[in-house]
Image 1 (cartoon, rainbow, N blue to C red):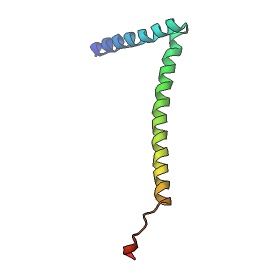
Image 2 (spheres, one colour; image 1 turned 90 degrees about the vertical axis):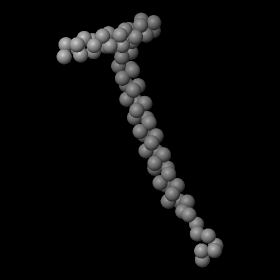
Image 3 (tube, helix red, strand yellow; image 1 turned 30 degrees about the vertical axis):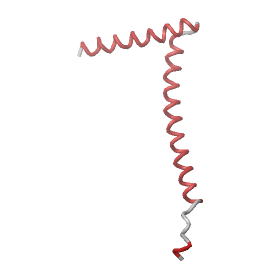
Image 4 (cartoon, rainbow, N blue to C red; image 1 turned 135 degrees about the vertical axis):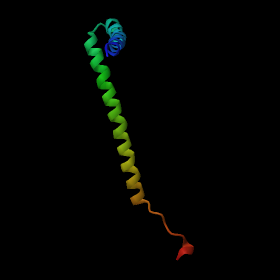
Length: 75
């Protein structure tokens, strides 16, 4: 279990170092960059889901409006 925490700490330090370098380059705190990445992740996943629901709604409405017309020969 100790090896797991050491590995987790290693990746957290390296990942946070990337945010730290971006923050240093921009001139803001690293905490702001980290939370921005988290919020962007939630927004993009939420946007994809909303887009999926919009297309599902659009297809359903299209199917209700444009019904398949029977052929002249089916009469």
